[in-house]
Amino acid sequence: MTMSAAAVIRALLAVAAMILFGTYYFQKKRDERVKALACKAAATAMPGLLLLLYGMENGGLPAAGYWTLAAVLFYMAADVLLECRFVWGAVSFAAGHICMMAGFMSGLAIGDFTQEKCGRFFWIAVVFFCVYMGAACFALRRYIFHLRAKKLFLPAAAYLVILSAMAASAASAGIIKGGMSGAVLAAGGVCFVISDVLLGQNRLGRKRSRAKGAAVLVLYYLAVYLFAAGIWMAE
Image (cartoon, rainbow, N blue to C red; front, top):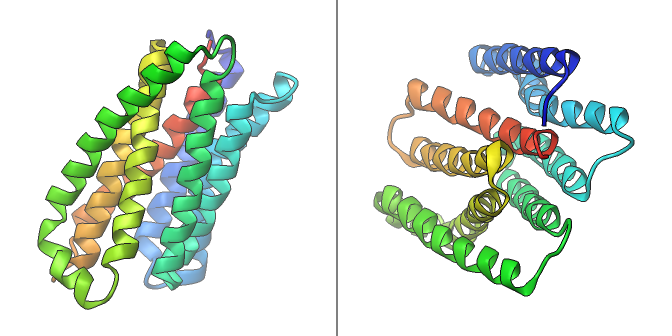
């Protein structure tokens, strides 16, 4: 899909706004907590705003677009909840992931959603799920005892399953769709997995790394932006 000059400018302005809001949150999250959390959620909202504008210009969004908007709302809520009630923040993120998975599948349902395509989607997703789940478990293996001690092992495992399933669905949908829109969907899933693994390491480790915290934020915002971009870039 060829984007108009106005659409390109909006996309770039949204990126700039995400950088500004995200930077303010990162710099002021200890000194000005309320404003910082508002900015954190505002940065997440930018891709959703772009989707709304895209829908207004094109007479509405495809089903995948509405599911993505729902996911963005859950992610915005999680941005705040994660800082106040970490477990509830994870629950909100999980709900967003489920909405995103629904969006990936509804996006593929456009046209002839044959049994062959359905089977291909499933098996590609299974392969990527095993890859993502295995990589996440390996990266977080040293914190298993800590999670068990705090009785958080099962919630953490459940979240990793949902996260890996979402990222695997993104990879599968991206491969089947092909093109640039498919590539950005797959890349968004990878970014989200890496971001959450780094977040887990930073939260559960003895010392929190500021550099790792910055990487978590950048990859998270990039993932959400790529998921939304996969809608308006679709042919």
